[in-house]
Structures are given as C-alpha cells and as structure tokens.
Length: 472
Ligand code: CTP
Image (cartoon, rainbow, N blue to C red; front, top):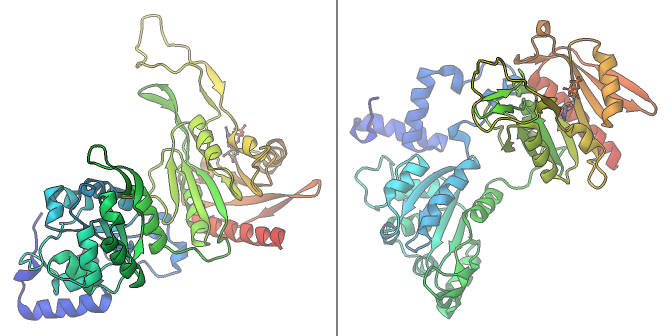
C-alpha cells in the first residue's frame, strides 16, 4: 500500500487542504483521508437520499471520523504502564485516542507501544519535522474533544498550574480550549505536600477535572497511602461521562435490556447447535432505544454485526450464559427478548472432539434450556416494568403468539412469521404483529411490512408512549 506525505505536497495544495480541514474542524491528515474515502467509496461517505433512519444498521454505526476524540497525555511516572491499558479501555468504548508522551514517560513505556495500541503514531516533540499537523501543538490541542493527563505527576501538575509550555505536553495543555481530565499519580507524601495541594486547587479553579488519586499500595516497597492513579476503567468511565453527557429523549433515564441473535449450544469443543437468527432486529431495537436516550444493555449471541453506537454490548454463546448475563443486569425498567434462544442443549457436551467410531453415530441427548423470557417475566424481586417477548413462528402465527403471551407471562409479544418464504430470518425486512394484554383479552396490532430499523423505531416509540402513560 502506497503512503502519502502531506508535507511533500506543493504549497498551494497544502494551503487549500489546510483551509478545507479547518472549515471541517479536522486535521489535515483526516481531511486527506476523507477526500480519498469520498473518491474511493462515495456511498460510505454520502448516504443515499432518504432519511438516515431508514439506512440499515451498519450504515448507522459511527464511522471513525465521528467518534469522540481523546488526546491522552502520558506523564512520567511508574503508573504510565496503566495508561497503555487506558488506551484500550477508551477504544472499547468507541473513543478515538491520540497519544502524547512527555520525555519522562518514555523512561517507563515506549511511544511505539502507545502508538500501536492507539492505531496512530504517538506524539513526543514540540518541534516535530514529521508531523503533518499544520500547526503542531495548536492542532493537537484543538483537534480533540477531551484531554486526559494520566498519569499526572506532581511536576506536570505544577507546570500546568503555572502555565509552562516548554514541551509538547505542556504546550498542548496551555493551548487547548477543550475540557481536561487529570488522573494524578504520585507518592503519598508528594500528594499531601502543600505545594501539590496549592497546584491542585489552582487547576480545579481553572476548570480542570480530577479523577483520583486512590488510596492503596504504592509501587515502591512498604509505601501506602493516597496517591495511586485511578484504575484505567475508572478513568475511562469518567472520560465517557464528560464526552457523552446524560441523554435526553423520550427514554432518558430508562434502563433497557435487549437480547438478540442466536445461541450456540456446544456438542463438543468444535461443534454446536445453532439457528439462522442474524440478530439484526434486536440490534436495530438497541440502536433505536439508545437514540431515544435509554441506557441500553444488549446481550447478544454470536452474530456478525457491529456494536450499535452508545450501547453496552455483552457477547455470550449459550442460553445459560445469556440467562446469567440477563440476571446480572437486573434491575432494569424494560426488557426486550428478541434472541432466538436454542430450546435445547446437549445433556453432556463432550470435553474433547467426538470421534467417529465403528459402532456408528453417537447418541446426542438433549435437555431443555432455561426459558429466559419466562424467568424474567415471573421474577419475584426484580420484574421489569415492561417485558416484551418475540414469537418466531412458521404457522398459526397469532394463535401461537397468543398462547406464548399467556404461557410466558410477558406484557407484549412481537409476533413474526419466520417461514423461509417470508425472508425474515437474515433479511432486512419484517412484518410484525404486536400482541398486548387488554384486561383478560389479547389485542393484536398488525403493522405493515417495514425495514427492521423502521420496526425498531416504531416499537421504541410505542414503548416510550406506554411507559410515559404508566408513569404519569
Ligand atoms: N425465549 C427465551 N428463552 C428460551 C426460549 C425462548 O427467552 N429458552 C424467548 C425468545 O427470546 C422470544 C420468546 O421466548 O422472546 C419466544 O421464543 P420462540 O423461539 O418463538 O418460542 P419458544 O419458547 O422457543 O417456543 P417454540 O420454539 O415452541 O415456538
């Protein structure tokens, strides 16, 4: 693959690129990538006409360019190794990370490692001939949504409080107009020192946010107290709260759990029983619920789909794993069981691959899996306010779905025809009937054929209006 160096382009072209990048609020590098992407795959950049809500799930997932961006400044302390884990924790939350290291940090971890984990080179020098940023530290300071300093040493905080700018890290911190989150890490006596307290108070007064330090064992032998850097997950959670402030929307403040996809029930370590569920409908519901402001947990069997934006995704294999994760997620307000859970599993799955023998096929004994929907619908302590099941049927749709609603004890059933002729399994469209309880009767609302995203949006709208009425 050829590489392209912006620095080597002629001045007029560079100037117009800078202008274009500045207008779009992107770095020159990102702008060049965008131009190349536009040329190579116009569909990926400019969605076809029509409302975005009608695009398939994959088109609605975030592209790399609209992910929130963090500049992680790694200071020179022993906790620098934890900053490497922080890169991973941020990335698994769909946050783009760009790293900057102080000179001292490079005594503890290498820019190469940080760059490899972040998928982008790590910046170290104030005067960097290789940098393709048009204004070096100014670009790095602004081309981000949040700056994290982790670990923040006593010395680095002192420089920040004083407004020093004698290296790349401090120059970025002085030049930025973005929020800054600091994770201090130092010896307890240094943390307790009045000079550090003064600097911390000054930085807090200047609008800098802090996470930690925690109390505990220090890296040095026999040293303990307050000064340990917060754990990478704690810092990532704090960063996420700053980047993605509390949701608004009709389901804001509601915790929704959704199951999706098939389950795989092992026969032995290499074989399993499965079904044809693609997970598309459940994933689309999770995306719609998150857009409506809900706090969404998606418990998914094995599928080939990207995580929906803003959704906590827990991947499982078997029905029993799925039930365990659903129970661990309680209490919740609304549960939607869209998964095609395998009804049976092998009674005693082999620990080794089952071999062919002269005596013929091994008998596979099946036992019934737990019914997750029924378990949660009948939960004694933590039954959600609204429990919705699906009924995938190949015949007698309404009749079978009605008996499922009664048998499983849920509030609604979304019934759909999954016979091969319907094309629902694995397809992008769905025709559903919503069965709800109407005193002792069951009411059926039949919706027209829609894309799975449209079904998801309509279902989420119905949930929001029902919950709103119940709570008013
Ligand atoms: N379901 C579940 N746990 C199971 C089986 C099903 O949570 N072990 C849920 C599904 O997620 C769906 C609903 O129950 O919301 C109905 O699933 P479906 O496969 O249509 O029905 P079954 O209960 O499996 O009954 P049958 O296969 O006999 O139609």
